[in-house]
Image 1 (cartoon, rainbow, N blue to C red):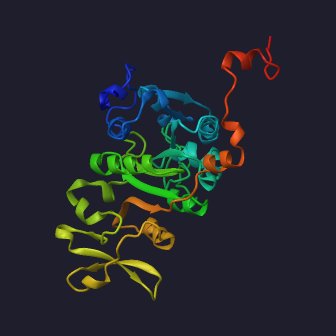
Image 2 (cartoon, rainbow, N blue to C red):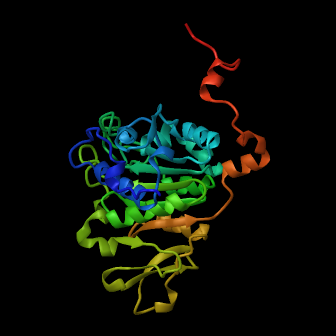
Image 3 (cartoon, rainbow, N blue to C red):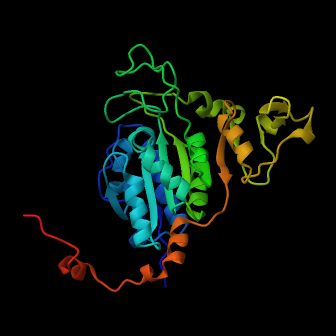
Length: 328
């Protein structure tokens, strides 16, 4: 009989060391709670990270973990999933680690639809290396590496994902316990690469960069929480809605009382509307924006090579065999 684990069972004895007030603390709590909710098993769960503030994550979750090198977490995680498809593999990365040096690995992971759960913590800055502008930093961002303001066009994680052929893309806010928890559970249930962008507040180098839509006082008017098959409503008393304008080929905000029949109903399989939702400035779309079920990479691989699933050697036998060597 299996014992139901709690969020505390997924917390390690390691001292959690991020800057006081950092959004990572809230994300960590949401992840451990989600692992307990979905019935994850510590012995078959793995967290893989690259380099950056987010890379500390595997030390703080009572599962297996790999702290790898800059940008290479998706590649290592892909190897893990192919070697043992039964593993529950999560990748933790940041906007710098994942979309700069790791952009190529991330792209191929997304297009292959490997069974990984990828969490991209987006704070629009390089935090670990003291505040340089990152691939997602907005034009004009002043930083040590852009003292007169960045002239780069920022990467949109969502557009990058869909352009690479991702089958699942979601968004959440670090301190939104309910919304983030639901997205994590949905990502865990997806058979394939579940890519989630989490807006994370870096209080030291980019504080309140997302305040325009994360401020709870006006959240009803700045956040659009999506749910499959439900109308896209927001605002006080759900008085506002989202409509597709066929003339401008864009989404627009309408007063529900004026045009109740024009409000879009969320369809997670509609890639066109997903792209428009990703670019929507205010309100910001949150939740599962796009989900298109498809065969995962590991399923297709083992269907083609069923004999590869037969594991006849133990680690000790492999090390002593002809396919390994000793460096002296």
